[in-house]
Image (cartoon, rainbow, N blue to C red; front, side, top):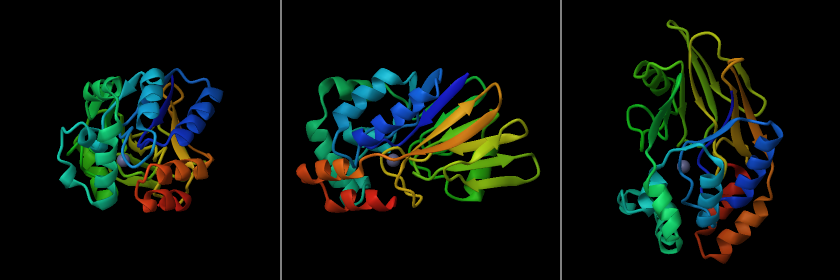
Length: 242
Ligand code: ZN
């Protein structure tokens, strides 16, 4: 089976559309989303509708939970809090209802999925080798998928040594040996210095993973952010990929 994995869309519709077009060219069997469909960006309802329509598995993230009131918005700093409050004010009933039915973790054959990490599926960031190793050791599946940090990662554990790390565009991994923790990076707000939208292609028969990046019209998202009166920094950072 060929699986496309996306995460952290953050209401960035042009980025999501560009990724879905790239995914279509790869004739995948399933599309999985690791959460944070909304928050930060200007088109939450459109992104929820498209994600709901296209994915066969979706997790919720901390931003999704905040706009639903399931976690406290005061846990968020400045721009994130302002965007969460705005998102709550415009989110449709149907879209909120769908998000409410999602969980921050899930399991599929040979794979465990978390928005954050196995230690805390909502809040924990896997951004160091130490946390990656803890995450691998706290799970049993050959493959562990996480989102949340907006940084594409691929780390392998052979029982003795940890290998891998950052996974820029073009990174291809052979998953045959050992166990792996992968983060596809973010569709709608990448933070690894590459502003292009990120996604991950997994072939669970060939046991291969490929990290992909797609250009999208960033200025369209930036214009929409400014039109809605969302914090300007949320628009500016998209051009830098930070
Ligand atoms: Zn996020």
